[in-house]
Image (cartoon, rainbow, N blue to C red):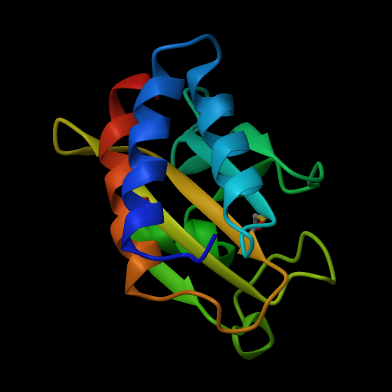
Length: 152
Ligand code: SME
């Protein structure tokens, strides 16, 4: 099925259902990775309760990564945590501050997740395609971040 507004709506509805089951965050990762062709790694990074200004990996779907702890400012994830803003990289070869998880990854989008005005984590998506992300991804993923925020 094409990645269009209808599919975005469907995925939001399915994410809502997934959040009511067990392992809600992992279920959302699996849903997005399985259903969106250009999502190859989908995962959450959480604020590390042990260390200041550091992210620790949370539930994810895809290949395990060596980047389980990421400091603020490091890589795309750390930069998104530092600025509190969505960070979209359509071609990772052009981003100098980038932590590679796999040579197959071509692009990445990271969205900070807030609760009660404070950063609680991030949603990180890697794609093996170059320049795959559009406004539809932003709409879908911002919606997902709002939905999952109470679960982080
Ligand atoms: N590429 C990320 C590291 C995390 S992996 O994509 C799972 C970064 O540059 O922060």
